[in-house]
Image (cartoon, rainbow, N blue to C red; front, side):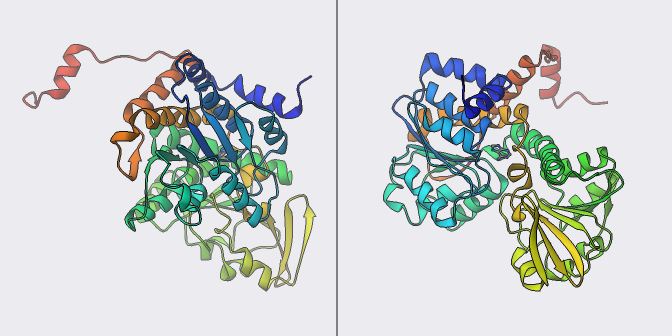
Length: 408
Ligand code: ADE
């Protein structure tokens, strides 16, 4: 009888068709033979399927979490039983234990690193420079991590090539939009059991994640308000049919607040004080900085846990409810993105690891886009696995596209 972790992994594996095709090829070709892959990702069932794909490709994998509260311990335990896998993730780690676990991964002297949020790559460039020279290349899963790595490149300290997996079209158009859109409400609804229809949902940030959240909020019957700092994105939100206003105004009408900006202090003291009684506060961004929890704690008259992972703060006599301590609500209160979108994200990761293992000698330190052929392969395989065929350009169409002489 399989344990709970193995059952969760099997459920995901059976629905990750693209990764399955890659796993079968990896098993024949063993492109990662002799390669140590160090990973800091959300350790849950879909991530385990990426791990087993890399192992099928010949890699030895050392993995830990990328958020102290997103690890699924059932899955982490199952991974610990696997050959060629060392897993250091555990739910609820203190900050010290969290970084100790990243250090344990680095102790394996990885050739390739796969990061989500940038903590592993950051650690290698600061406290663990001793293992930096051996790293041939890496990849980063999320917008926040890429922002950090871009800043490292700008400051001239980035020491190996890093591929921006987040920026592949088969990643952000699906994972960030449909993945975050669905999993954020999955987490909120599982965690609170509240009705979304008829509520005013305030979405902070109209990037790909914010778009997905706003779209799904509308689908669930909410009145949706978007807040933005970028005028073009604000206009897009407006013309997508959402109300757009300053957070200072949104706080007076919002019932549920969801941050997805990648920035800090998006909801802060001046906002908490103007909120309605019973407002729910949730974050869908990578780090727990978007809702200024420190200020919330400082200005609240009382605070107490009223339901698992929900803290009630009384501010100026009004009750505000913080979900998941302001951490990623979709992974802390739910199971992360749906399987079928992580299939595409993690297929990009697996193919990028293969690309690094084959091409690292010709790459300089820096931030790289995922090669277009990988993006197109993932899209192609996904369509094929869904039984969808598409048209191809004819020869005359190809010629037409290259011809500047044909006009009116
Ligand atoms: N599951 C594994 N990694 C994830 C991520 N970055 N976002 C949502 N769900 C995930």
